[in-house]
Length: 263
Image (cartoon, rainbow, N blue to C red; front, side):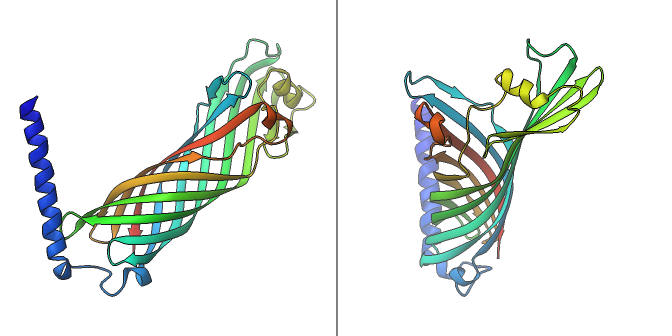
């Protein structure tokens, strides 16, 4: 154990010495943004995003977490320099697409139904407002950390179920924002929307379009051009609204892994 601690301390000392060396020679450091990073600090980001919802019942404090949605995020950011090559204010706009595909085999399904497939799809606009700190390790590699809120605006949030029956295929969609279902096809075979509601496959009420998240990310910058970030955001707003919000509190958690190009 002492041997491992000694190795860890030595590694930390080496990293610190590299950092000090980089700081002492920073004016000689080659940069792709030599004039002013705040002027040319635009970034294009793309990556993976996973979100899940944790629901808490007010009366019992019983918690339930959804399976989660997977998707991608793409967007642009802009850096405004506060302290040269160290501290920045960062703002941007992102588009988020997520989907949860699942097969349901409820015990109480109608006799005609042989298979049920569901897709929960969400589209968001995300506006992050962050404070960004960077620390050089070598001439071309640095560490970075970002912290701050993100403001989400829901564009669409729908669940679509398709039921395969012995008489054909029926489908219906459910809008989470207005709590309305719509039969797309096969209504003469089976009312999928009513069946979904009867079997507890739809939420009990509407959810909000807008959300506020607070999060942080860490990562690395390479050659002042490439960057990689790993982050997590905690939802601050109860997604339920109306009468359901009096009994349940549902909040979003969001994990992201992104790569970006800064120019």
